[in-house]
Image 1 (tube, helix red, strand yellow):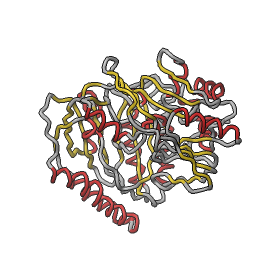
Image 2 (tube, helix red, strand yellow):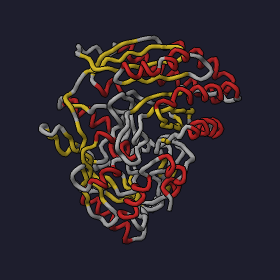
Image 3 (cartoon, rainbow, N blue to C red):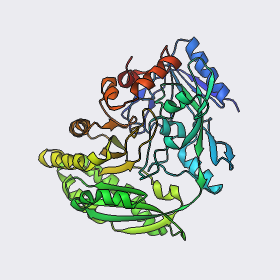
Length: 439
């Protein structure tokens, strides 16, 4: 199969609809060689190049007015190595396809985020993560990757081959080249028991350290305008599998989390004064439940209600204090917040621009329903996060720039020096990268 090229300016939009781009042409390569050819041709034509995934980022990380590379044909599993326990996949493979294919082979990733609509390259390049005491982001599970660099060559990097590129390119923001394929570490498929349970805000925050220490994967959601949270503990289980019943699963995942939530958000956007009452009702509608299933069916859930999101990684010991500051700020402000605030954790890792680079981290994520003005809320939250040395998620709304990142990332200079070497002409540049990495 060979790829396709589409010329003429059609508009590309991200999932949330807050970013648009009008590229000169769109290319859908069907192989690493075609990808390299597309990069070389763009350079010859004096056009910038950006690869786009499913548009799940809320930033303009992938936007370009040059050549937009769509990964729709660059998908599928290339190789499974049961001796090394790795899987190599094409960059455009959606996580949901990878998860289902691995499960059929009796394999699984160790940890993952809560959405699986993204492509593997898009998710890892922006630092997508779940929650975990020992197990880190999706990018931290990468064993090797193939990168098409600015001169059109295909560079393979791992701990042994081009290790200085590997140290940075696992979360490369699309700044170092276009990812062609990724090799992940995998393990035999296992079972997780999820325990979801409502808990008071004061109790969760007081016991956060213990809840983190006692569970392999702990997260919680606080409902603004209430003192209520919902907690989720995921731990490995000997089985047997006991998935949610079809009806109760549908009620929880589709009716409460998507259908009724969509209605509540629409009402809240139209009549903001109703939000606190809706929040009190929603936070009480959730009941405790326990179920056991294979990892991707426990870690991930459908997200059909569209939103805009900002998320910051803080040193783990700063998270509870920062969350209490967010709560106090909302209570004394006229803000009406319809979406829960999400708190997750990650161990330190060794990737230059990972939000958990070199430090144990906790994440605080704030969301607002798509179409709701979010600037005043996000600005107030961002002020609290940056006071704690917070690092924003690369794919979510933030206002930070290179000067700020040079302060909060000890290895920032290592990344920008590598970028100068691999892409001196900024073939992969755009406005977002200029802001966050500097000229």
